[in-house]
Amino acid sequence: MEIISRRNTGKVYDAVIVGSGAAGGMAAHVMANAGMEVLVLEAGPQLDLYKDFKTHAWPYEEKYRGRLSPRDAHNYKYGFADGYTSHIYARLDENPYSTPEGKPFDWVRARAVGGRTLVWGRVSLRLSDYDFKAASHDGYGDDWPISYAEIKPFYDRVDRLIGVMGTRENLPQLPDGVFQKPQPLLCGETILKRGVEKTGRRLIPTRAGVTSEGVKGNRYRAACHYCGTCGRGCDVGAMFNSPTALLAPAKETGRLTVRPDAVAREVIIDRHTGRAKGVAFIDRKTKREYEAHGKIVVLGASTLESTRIMLNSKSRFHPNGLANSSGALGHYLHDHTWGVSFTGFAPPLKGREIVNEDGRPQGTYIPSFRNLDQASRQQKYVRRFGYQCGSGAGIFPGHARLIAGFGSSFKKEVLAWHPGVVRMGAFGEVLARRENRVSIDPNLKDAWGIPSLKIDIEYGDNERELTRDAIECAHEMFHAAGIELITENRAMFPPGHSIHEVGTARMGNDPKTSVLNRWNQAHDIKNLLVVDGSCFVSSGCVNPTLTILALSLRASEYAVEQFKRGEI
Ligand SMILES: Cc1cc2nc3c(=O)[nH]c(=O)nc-3n(C[C@H](O)[C@H](O)[C@H](O)COP(=O)(O)OP(=O)(O)OC[C@H]3O[C@@H](n4cnc5c(N)ncnc54)[C@H](O)[C@@H]3O)c2cc1C
Ligand code: SF4
Image (cartoon, rainbow, N blue to C red; front, side, top):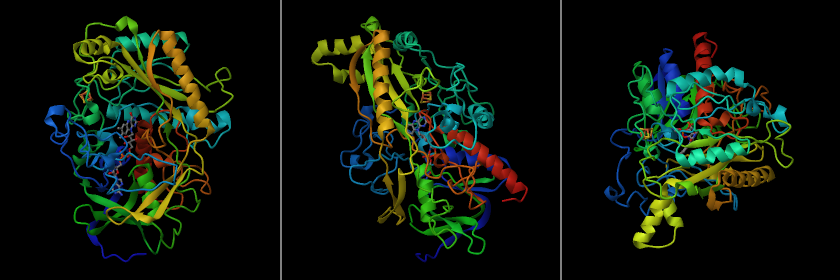
């Protein structure tokens, strides 16, 4: 191992946490509020959310009209960063990774205090026992070591803490939460809903991690004012992000220190006890090496970054990577299928007066309806999919590209279509397979000399069959709603593109087959917690962040209790 002379940050914290997004932010919030001295190490810069978000910038104010500089676009090649947000996302030239030939993986990362919560899509849905106990339901893979009943109280508390808009629907596959006032459906969505209901399915307002009523006791959050530019970062803190919902209130305790520009390299292991002793990190700007010491180490650097840190933390006690006596570390990477999407037109809305209706933080959702019971059981695949939908006149009418012509007749046609465009896109479960994995690439390092990941994943027949069915069902629902299909994409995006990557340090009751126990604590090292999506056993078909928040809350409270009793 490389011998490095490191500066010590000079204090032994109760907890050193890596990452300040949903997972790390929640751990910091819980631990600082419980009286612990906490240090958060964050690889990216500290942004000023009021000055550095370009929430309301106009294209003509931007050098490339809101697009990426043509010279720099290859560093953000997955299509999420743009001219308004590139300062939030990770750059590929600084943060490289490799994939085997013909097996792409789109790894979308943020590098700033707050992580991806600064720009996330806000869809906030719960897993159910169809997911936690999926293997018992259909025989594939493994159950989680926890049930919905155990995590429900934590989901409820997360809902109250972050503010979630939504409606109670009493669907067992999509449990209800503690909701704030929902946003109403638009006309196109109401037309789609009628069609969806004709097929025996449901369409509901999307449950969004946005406060419509304010969050009691949090002066950093304001109620949503429906401006609709959430993807650039919300400069009033209406949409949940870690800095306003978690870190700022935790800093008020006086016990939380956030150190930005601190790129964690590895977890330091006490050479006598084999316990975690702290984290070695590199200053992003000066490239100097430091050590931060803590009684507990918490990894919340996002699914693959936490696993990378563990794989890079080899020692006499942990020769195959940290807490990897099971050999499961790095394996069972999975996410959600995404890509198949449909754009249609609702004829009754053609030429309707255009109103300001794009100022909303989310759209609508069609919950899963396959493989719930005997009647909905599919022969060709297991698990389920759901659709995110939307409609209405947006500020930049994307459908203009689908209309031929030019001049004033073209503009009239674009306007006539504008209120009636309806969109839906499917997200489906990807099975957790051992062979889909990450490892350290011996030939690749990042800008700070830290070995990078090799990501090796591909979809299988189950994902392909599930997607085929999602395409057919979408056609069926458009048809039932009288919506004319204008264009569609029938191909899945490469793995990773859903930005829902999970797994690689799975939890389980058996230390021989899992990395973490049911409390997100490493089986092999009691004072190491991993609180992000790497702990997932399976992903259901719903977006993961609400579950990451609930698990991090649960794990952190458990660790605080153990810490206070002197058991870790
Ligand atoms: C455009 C977009 C839309 C999305 N939409 C949704 C959605 O609608 N619903 C949903 O549930 N999820 C959505 N997501 C995903 C969601 O953002 C993530 O699931 C969530 O942020 C994960 O939280 P995390 O804390 O694990 O990781 P992150 O939020 O990514 O935070 C990890 C932090 O760790 C830091 N870090 C990484 N490595 C190191 C290191 N070595 N040293 C120090 N710090 C490090 C990073 O800089 C980052 O700040 C979306 C994401 C994006 C980008
Ligand atoms: S619509 Fe609401 S959540 Fe989105 S940016 Fe505007 S105020 Fe924030």
